[in-house]
Image (cartoon, rainbow, N blue to C red):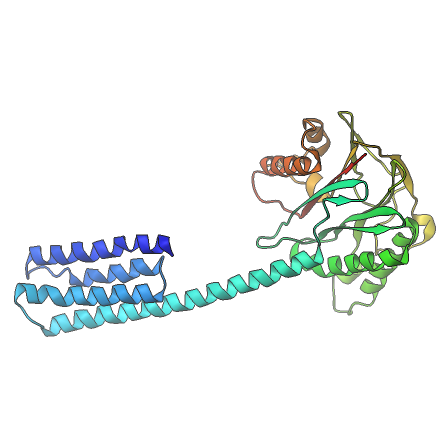
Length: 356
């Protein structure tokens, strides 16, 4: 509001300059109609009230000039005054409509942000013996979430995480994201093993899509790549099950390695899951180790020449200071520098450090 008031100097100065110029040029030149520029300029940065005020001042300026010149009110002057008044009225009406739409947009965005934060809850900075940081880069403008997902919960004396990628991107995938995360959180109180959890999530997604209407073209082709992880509190290890998801990166003593699954399982939802489709992999994860989880929106982000983002190489160049928060921020900034523009797909990052 203070900035708008400061800008009022511009239309006021225009009115003064035009009035003075009109008086100095005499009756032969009519500059009065140019006064309509004052409310027009005002409507670009101020509300309908100030726009209307400038319209009134513009009309007053149009009327003052003939009296200064001693000409009085003529039919031509009346037409000019009516013209300025009508144009000013239109500007006030248009500004009122614009302000109304801006208020509605702000309200809509606030509701969308609240809904998005409820769907993908922020990860806790500390959970069990873990320190965590997460980042989400949505492909669609004005969105904070899309087809990528992550969540954390406590189960069986361990911290349990999921990171996944629903087929598709942006707002069209939010429904499937919501369904999967709901199933993940609801499983926490049941104390399922990691293998039982995969079966539960796979069945939830498969039957959700199987029950979709016949006219839904996406239902038969939907699936979710996911990585499930258990971090036991009393063991320096991590248990993982890969459902077609990219392998995490382990940072240990300055070295970076990929934790490849022995037998990656099928993405969730393609078929009804079978136990022999999935296997639990166990890796060492001791004090000070850092695990970086990511979705394919990170490693498949192209630069202007089409080259994908070299995540492993870029993480190897990280100085290792600052913990998970700084690692996530480093990859985020480096990724955007690589693409030199918005991402073509959603991207999610989670950095996890084992505490003593």
